[in-house]
Amino acid sequence: MPRSPRLRTVAFVLLSSAALAACGKKAPKQLPPPPGPAPVASAAPATQGPMPGSQADFVATLMGKDVIYFDTDRYNIDDEDAAALAQQATWLKKYPAKRATIEGHCDERGTREYNLALGERRANAAKNYLVGLGIDPARLSTISYGKERPVALGSDEASWAKNRRAVTVTID
Image 1 (tube, rainbow, N blue to C red):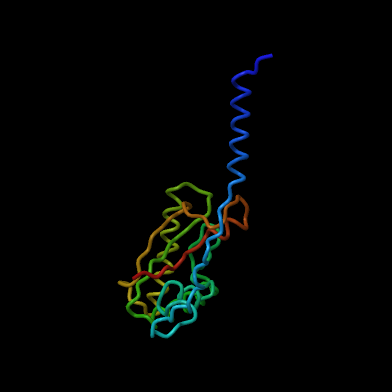
Image 2: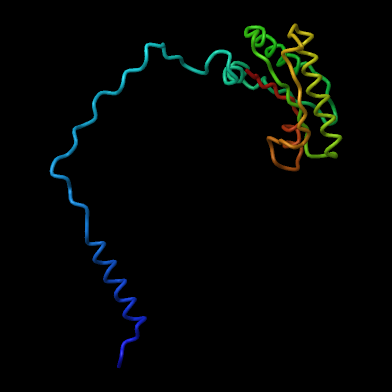
């Protein structure tokens, strides 16, 4: 009975694979020397934590107070928001060359236009409060993202509450 060309091809591939698998890499006759000592760091002192005056420093110093939250359809600053904004103002006064953008955000409910307007009112409320605490308004800008940048995905009150916010982000 003659063998088919297909069977020969399969047999050839299997034998070739086995032959290649049997070939192994030979160990070198001499191993390279072990690595030397670790390079010495520059003369600049090593700092622990984020660089002072950076956005990372802002976030670390405020420990979550870089964000304030709002009730549904509201943009008023309550006592908890006022305390967070006071901490932000203290940090901004410590770094007078720093500028900040205040981002206004909303939950998914409502039209795009309504949420952009509400986000703008939230950002402006935070900005005006910081100005009232002595921060130069020229150092602060606002932007509204409406419902376009949620931090919590979901259609429930817990998710919506996390998305109704104003976030202060340092720049420069």
